[in-house]
Image (cartoon, rainbow, N blue to C red):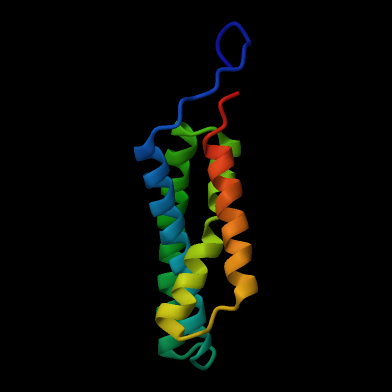
Amino acid sequence: MNKEGKDIKRQIKVKDILFLQGAVIIYTLSGVAAKIASGYSFLSSGFILFYGVEILILGIYALLWQQIIKRIDLSVAYANRAMSLLWSMVWAVVFFKESMTIKNIIGVLIVLAGTMIVNNDEN
């Protein structure tokens, strides 16, 4: 809201959306670190290393998120976080050779469509 108490819709810039998506990508890498950590015995050096990497990634993401919500309406920012489904699926295939089903792909396409609708809101 501005000084007069009126809502002002912030103009979404492409660079802000790209910055947001970069932050979401970083956020999803914490899941990769967590999955790798889960492959080690609890409190082993590998477990501690990858658990630490996960915490570091989440810390970086928290700092980026603060910058994002300064620039982008919170509703738009949260809608874009849904893209973490896409990036998590990409990492699952790339890093862990997991397979995607047609239902996974349809679900991500629906999320992508919803995110695009929110980003292009003209009201």
